[in-house]
Length: 112
Length: 114
Image 1 (cartoon, rainbow over the protein chains, first blue to last red):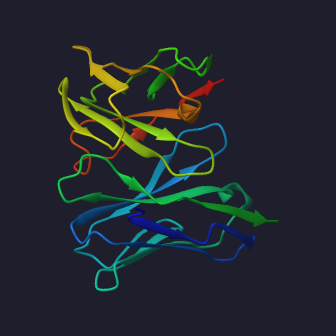
Image 2 (cartoon, rainbow over the protein chains, first blue to last red):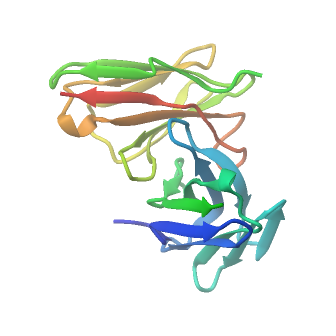
Image 3 (cartoon, helix red, strand yellow):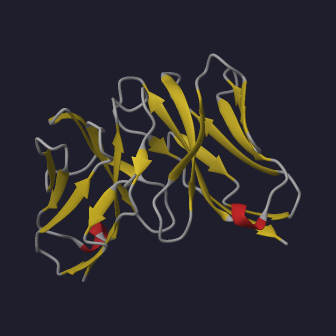
């Protein structure tokens, strides 16, 4: 049972373009939605997180858009750079659970 | 500042053996969580410990156990290893309960079961 569905599985974007990764969740008790970035051989690193009381959060080139009624949230990476090439994971927490539920990940490649 | 440190970085075990993985959290962090990441998948929650008590457990069999020590370091034990236990085991720490404070991950222990 996959509670957080992430798409696309892989994504290729030109340098300077906008990278968009989408996630959908089923559990309406989720109340914390972080995004993680993972490079090969490294652990995931927290990028940005949002709670359902706001529809958008921006930190530098990274923006989370949140649609509570549709139970969807997305990560936008503006002015994408080759150094952004990594695997990105969305996650969710809530409903009394003590651990994050992760999506399956998106392998992002930024072409120079 | 040192991040979350895990040891060993790589480990090869045989089916049926037992393994112990170790984690040192960021200084000042009182919560440690363990996740299993199979190649090509997102991490899956195994355990959370906060103030040395188990606060949550994911959908893993009883072969998996963990504990947190007075200095907040932690060990994950897996008994009767199966081929399917081959994965990257990630430890993460936070100063408080997950959701109230951000999770910081270590670089993991790569376990291979042959």
